[in-house]
Length: 124
Image (cartoon, rainbow, N blue to C red; front, top):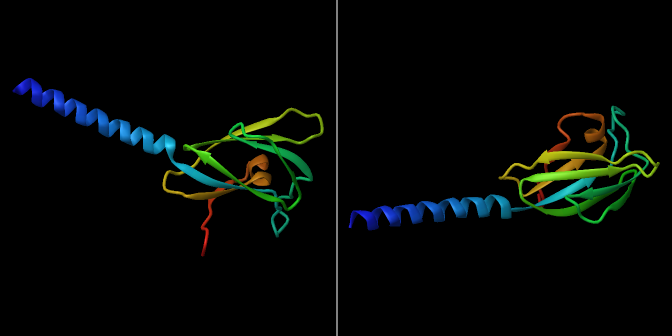
């Protein structure tokens, strides 16, 4: 009897842990990649580049472009190719679990200006 209760308790705990892991790793987020400069001129948009998000197909960006990606999980990897023969720069960001949508400013990310990733509220 005691062994049965212990075995069932262990199984319940394992199911709960599995549910938490599946929720965190399976959660999808909308990521808006933005290539706009600041209105005050503190940073400028990048003239031309290709962006790859989490290894997806690269997308070409010009000044003032914005595009939407859907990613799964909390880790966001952004690869920036300036199309000038220089090395591709890769940045890793963490998406907060509670956020459905975030916006990433590539000019801020490249310049090291914080925060480059901000919450984005849709349908407001």
